[in-house]
Image (cartoon, rainbow, N blue to C red):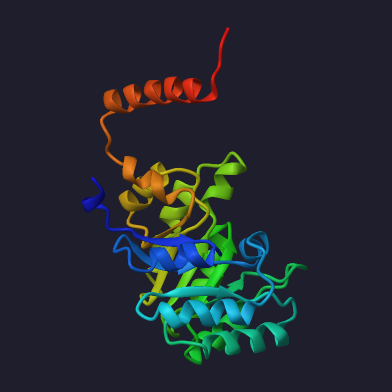
Length: 236
């Protein structure tokens, strides 16, 4: 079933060794990270992290995110990150922490040739605004956080379908299904024609279960329970 999937899979994480292991995997079409993942991975030197990755990953897109919260500093960080490699996409949040839209800056950067990945979008109104900003610019990505939309009890599929319709006005932009929660999301993304899905390193191994016979899966699960109980030395 995996060979029928057209949606590109981007590995999402900040584990340097894990990313480098995935770099040669043909299943992985690109990479994304963010400050939260980097902080959780214990990273303290952003520049060194980016440098080491780009020394090894030259033929697949990789997104690095700004962490500033003012337009001038976001601009500076974005241009600095963009200069580190031709395969770099600069992740820019859709707004500042106070809700100020970054669409004007996104337009400026995109039309200046910076490959942006605008992140943390949740609504189609945001998609409309950012699509207009990147329509005449460099190749770009728009990351809609489908998984977090689902966490709010809202079906993300209508929003993702509508986003694709809106983004037809920006043919060099690709829609990212961000923050998926399960392998089913890959199937859903593929069915609607979403360009990219991000998957964390703990979710990626589950892709191997795609299309698996459920009877076999059931037996393997029973065997796992028995094997783990024996390994634990349980008794009653």
